[in-house]
Length: 453
Ligand code: PMP
Image (cartoon, rainbow, N blue to C red; front, side, top):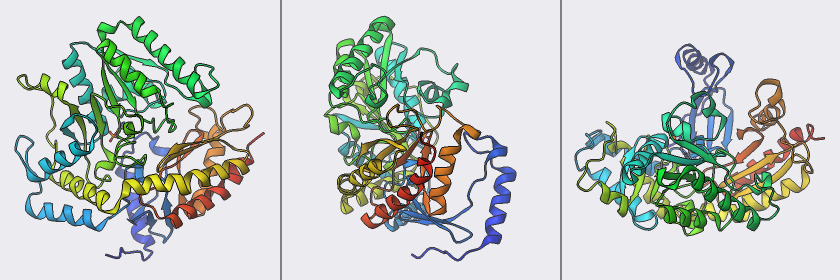
């Protein structure tokens, strides 16, 4: 299947005009955006109608873990559409039950039942509802540096500034600081110190909130949108122990970090921690058809054995989305995509990015694992002052805008969030493609370097 790549600026202009006239874009001031009209995509690349091709270091929104248009997944979607395009959720449907089986077999511990949603935020909403009903408690604790989704409770649990306008969302949300040594909230200087202080802070927060009122603690196993901050080795086991001590449900949000992104099926496996509920989406089917879900432990599933779970969605476990998940998981097994992500991180991304950090004064820190990396850009390595202020926009954001433009001019589509660029290509990007992207980053970082002091 060779995708059409002949330039067609006229169609591109029409697509753009209709978009500007009628599409209301998320998280944006509608009059200030200029979305690229995309003509097609394959593997790690996409292209516009002018004939410009871009290497995608964003995996869409960190979801195309096996790249665009994988022929086996496209074929599975076509086959499902030909046989059973849709069916209501209350029935046993082959694609749905097979997807649930394949997911449950890969999630750790006894996370054996799968509640399907259409994406990540709905998974978070439903996980919190399950935790509240299971415990009979109402409060939920989340980390400041986090992102959990755009719906009511999910945005309220989020620490990212995008929640500010919706803070009235959900009663009983309380936040804490999770570990982040580079900008330590605890004034720690070593990982061990950061870990111990973060756990002490969490236990004190639990104590003062009242353990008997707290239904759940939700954490991203490796926080993604907030900066890809792999926690110290002891942190998640410590949180697990606190949850056990106080009867709190541990929800690990693996919407971004799950399905191979970190070089394991799920990021919590790096820490030998099994949550009570695990939320997933994105990589489950590489985002080919919207799908998310909650993997549920036996203990919580039992709560709803003889009592209905009061929640559901018309398109829960949609056959097309589930068929895409079955095909994606099978491709990941057959092609060793999870191992590829681990290998890529260890042999290309980590050494390549560390080398860039040595040469560029604007790179304050490199962190990550697998195909999940962040470069933190700073005005000074010594003071660690971010290259742009927190939540900067307009003129304040000029250095990051210039860096982004320099990448795009050279054919690389970068992921930019505040003062960071995240390096999150498809997990199966080739070594040559990854190196091509690193070479562009090298050149674009010289633009960022001009803003250092
Ligand atoms: N949780 C995490 C960790 C995420 O990264 C995201 C999306 N970036 C979500 C939840 C929300 O997922 P969705 O946008 O599919 O609702």
